[in-house]
Length: 378
Ligand SMILES: *Cc1c(COP(=O)(O)O)cnc(C)c1O
Image (cartoon, rainbow, N blue to C red):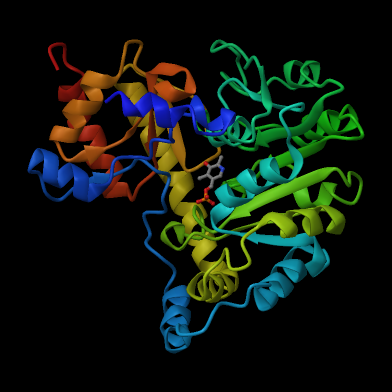
């Protein structure tokens, strides 16, 4: 319609060229479109264990107060998070998922005159947040696919080379989605050492609870040495509460105070706060998630390699596999089998599929049907 361009011209400059984020296909959508049932979704890095029982109980207890607004300050949850991380409650900002915080940081600190740095294959939300703010994204080249340790991973030197006088934000996912690669303590410190004094480094630790590598840094610990650091965490992945939308940032209190001016006063719900608080005390659930994930990563990696596929080493709850050709036919063949995985062409990786670690029998189901989905003619 002719009217489309007329309205498009009315949008803020950063919005005009924006492509909306495409989430993993929903189970209901697949079942409606393909007439399949018993769908297996391994597309959005959700925790296959289901939500922690303690969180569900806390939600039931909180239901009777739904006529009231949430505690906009999230007082109880912030106290508990502060205690857990050894920081002051004033250093915590709650978000509607950590996605909310990644966008709030762009809204708070970026202008059309400024730049943000992120990696070529970084989590796509960074580019969207920067573009929406009208700022310029400086994209650092990733390591080559042939890198022996971290194929397609973040290259700290390339990232630091993008730092400049207009850099205000640097977004780094550790580990990164969709590559599953990670930066060690020395690499993160080096990026912070080189950071311009008027820039902030956002360390997105969405998968931190899964990582067991000895050299993997706890970003919050680095805050004592580097006040320009902002660490984001989420309850969506290991804590298995993606549907509730809750995450948090840990930063210098003055940075938290600035973000607090921009965020909506009630950006996290009563149920999300109650469930998050309960989930934090459920160490057994996190331990179980970690054990299940380690076994599943192994199972998927071994199984996919046995099919002759290249699998990147991952420390997250997902693997990235290189099919060596455009993935769309294989993706669609899997959909017809009732299995949803994630194409990542929007990350500049048209030959790769991202597969979330599921329960052992779910991983097995994927590995069992994949050979016929890979056959030519699919
Ligand atoms: C999943 C994910 C997030 C966050 O998701 P929320 O549900 O919004 O907390 C953030 N960063 C990365 C890299 C992710 O993969």
